[in-house]
Length: 431
Image (cartoon, rainbow, N blue to C red; front, top):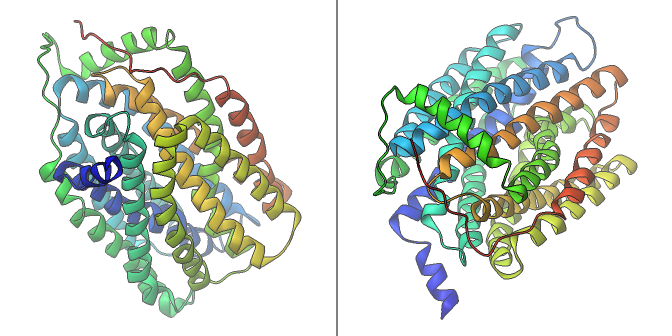
């Protein structure tokens, strides 16, 4: 009976609308950040630039790192303002629409347009990343302690479903590969992604509402200045939440591996394993199917054994798989490993988002989720840039992939010391 009530709770309009945003934005993550645009960037835009082997890897790492640095610096300010003004939904709408606009502009990029491509991608990804902070911050308001994992898993499941559907839609445009006559078709996938992202975000725009509060903050200055002062106070107070700090450090470390997967998976498959663009797309399509199912399972498992234990299990899986990929040179193994890593990544992120909801103070969701966002953002600087540098100077993507083990093992060690409280800490808003 309790299980049926949990499942029924998922289909409330605010929760469905929230999860549909994951359905929408994963199209951007899959096409622009992971599968198509990275390959187009390194093999078409940067190709023939004369800077040597794997220069595209380095530039792609710089692109991703620059985006995340900007997002990491701005996110806490946005979060403080959104919590204070109760305007998370407004921020979500504005940031999403701007990201969609820059995503559409990627259509106009061609060979040799390296600087323009970097600027447009950084802009599109920056607004995508900051919008995700506001999306995540709704989770504590939409879930209870006994179903946080289930709700979080529901969002991820719909997200992977959205990614799968997007890949199926764009696959006909990719069948011609990277040959010159097919480049227009590849660029069309960026337009399709922009439309998909916007259309399926509309329910969240309409039905996600900020939680009303009885606490009134008397602001005698601009929201921007107040956001900075709110951030300064949070930085002073956050040091007293030792478990949150330990978790954020662990999350930052192991997220580096996830960032490398997101940024370089398709590039590695193309340049090291010599897979074609249609083969890479099929690989991601195949990888998304079990991940959708596993998102529900691990969401349920989080509510059963705890988010921390799920993180530990999935990190161990990650470490084993990375070792196998580097040691054994078989395409079949890479296919299997990719599916397992996709499952492990989604499961770890579901558990991490759930654990974060237990550690943040009540009433400061967006502000504290911005620090969670910072962990992911800085990992998306260090991880991809490290991969790009190792790949460029050693001329070996396998050695670059091996560097992710440092981040995974370090994160696994630190997460052991995080103690999960029985109830969320309180937080009183003051001037």
